[in-house]
Length: 90
Image (cartoon, rainbow, N blue to C red; front, top):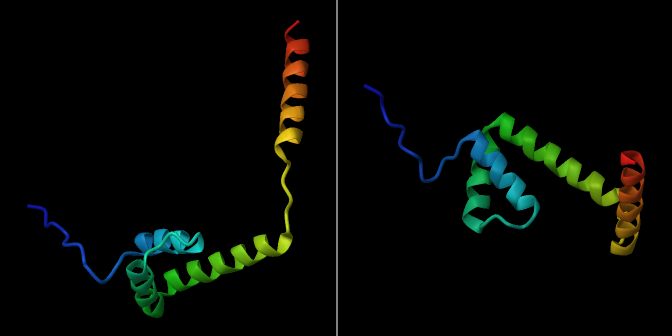
């Protein structure tokens, strides 16, 4: 007979901690989720490593100041791509 695991109200798994960490990065995590993440962060080296890597990644992306194409440039590229595909089909 299998034992059913009782889900803890306060303690979370590493997978759940990683999910909450990702949500917190985009300001989508609730205060309660952030509290549970901090609690796990203090005693789990895997969670601590994941959180620290996530912070470094976010800082690197913010520091890179990447600029994206605007809508007109994207449309222009898409039209050119479609024209080239039509030429290849002929």
